[in-house]
Length: 494
Image 1 (cartoon, rainbow, N blue to C red):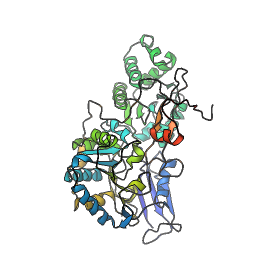
Image 2: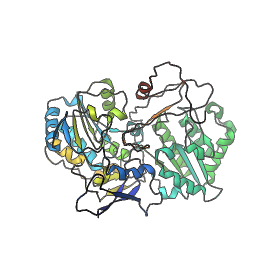
Image 3: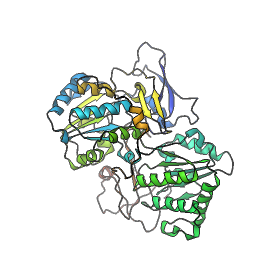
């Protein structure tokens, strides 16, 4: 019986789970007669969320693709890759871009850099792009200790973005009345429901709020701070200051920006400084599972991350290679060139547009390593047998014309990455005023049972002076809304 332990691909909690095939077979069988059971790792306190349980469904998903193709002519993965390599060789590397999904291993990211160098490509970038701002930040958080903290400061909607942290924060609340969960977010969110207090500064002002907290824990009187400019009640702010100072270092500051913050790099920098002052642990939660590790490899190699996004939006690319990701879904409004090659597992939004498609394995079907959110390296030593497909690393070997060597010292490079002083490129553009806010999920997020769904949702702020909403171009097109149209936004509460 095939029985492996692996990690979830859906968020940076990187939850461990055990995947088993039943009944036992000599080789995996995919279809109605196949059954997989998925259990959370009993050695991991936080368990596994509903999104993580979806990994079991992915293993036998009925829409999974198993055949490589050029246009709609089917062929072997190696032949398809060889054809694509010949096309790329005839193009200028300046007009080609590579995009890497956050579920790739560190070794696969290093191979992508070598592949880019072979074809003279400098424009290489990770997806989701929102995670770039956090790539250089180190975390020293221990997730199990979140459940024992006196104070947890949560910045952003961590409960929605990384659901298994919910249990840990709730467990801490059960320890006694002294525990406090302070939530800071620019919008009302699910995490905020459980915060006491919930501090909701205007969009673009979260960094300013954190700087005021730094001043307050440093001894400045609350009444001397310009809280009215941020719309924060002095009583709520004072409670947060008390929670920081009274925890005696037994706490965490957790930042899960998602799509809620105008400058997540600046917020992370201020949050880390606050954590150092009050001697709390600090952790950043990216949308993707291995975003920080992949970013560090690309940045260290001098890849033009900003240029990749810009060239795609400006329509200045002749070819795009998307490795287990889908830029048509993650970067709405991007101008996809005619030569658009994808690797992946299921028919995401870009599948029908792809000039080349090569099926690949999921994270739980391969070995390798990830940069842990808890500050070390996760080793994936067990893999579920993949159903006649190769890993994206093997596909890159086909494109390269031989096995790509993985450089020595890769893990040390990732662990010892120096945090940048300035913010990396970010695709987030937030107007100066008149905004409610918008979130746009990427291809790996799951809620309704479909691997390919997009999450578009308005994050409502009920301030009377706000009378506008920002929608992604994709959502606006679907519902027929144009710029300056009058609309009504409502939910179950009104």
